[in-house]
Image (cartoon, rainbow, N blue to C red; front, top):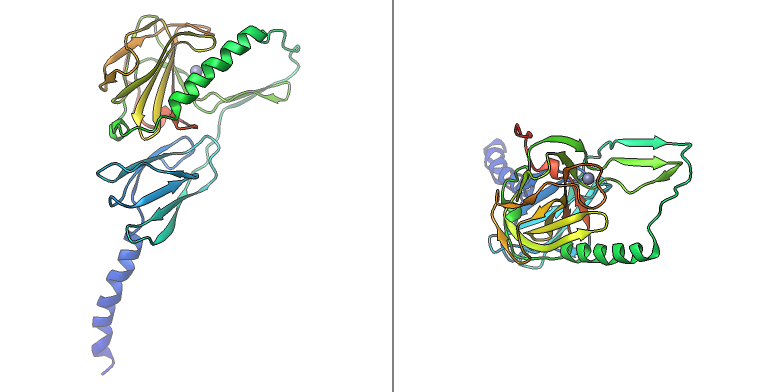
Length: 274
Ligand SMILES: [Zn+2]
């Protein structure tokens, strides 16, 4: 009479198997290098990523950012309400970046003076501090939109190797647009940095979208917000320009999750017609 027990036993064990798979946190977003990924847990759960204890919203939302060169097996360390711990692997897709090798260049003649270098370091410290803000703002949960419409003239992650020396990769997306074109907040947030004239980035605005996610907009011709101001998605924050070290009018839009550099293009759809 064994078969009489087999079917009820299957029913007992099947749901247990399904529950085990279900206990993985569902992740929303591109699990690729430069991607921003949102997850949700029962409030009271602790989640750690890359050595950081993640802020969990009252509704259980958290966000992580994957760096340009993020290793393929990133790990979420989860501590449940009852103290039980487990790990969840995030399989990160590797990307191919646009790498340009240029050899035989004459040795660089122009490097910043000591005075400029001092200024650059100060400005970088301001940007760095703005990127470390870990606020409860929930702007990162919004759909993102392009801050301006135009031709994409520079992509995330690209890098030039000059005379065998790798230069700093391009951490953002460049959108060519006429000077004076309004720049709109891609998602809700709070303005955490306004600087009228940085050495490299010119007129600069940083927006905090919450939980360590931020956007930076540089090379603008005009800034129309102040520090501490809350902005809605689509609100005009400034105008396209070529301030700082820029070869022509364009908007550089960079995104961060704390120090990790994200690719804004992964968060928005097709470029709208300008
Ligand atoms: Zn750029």
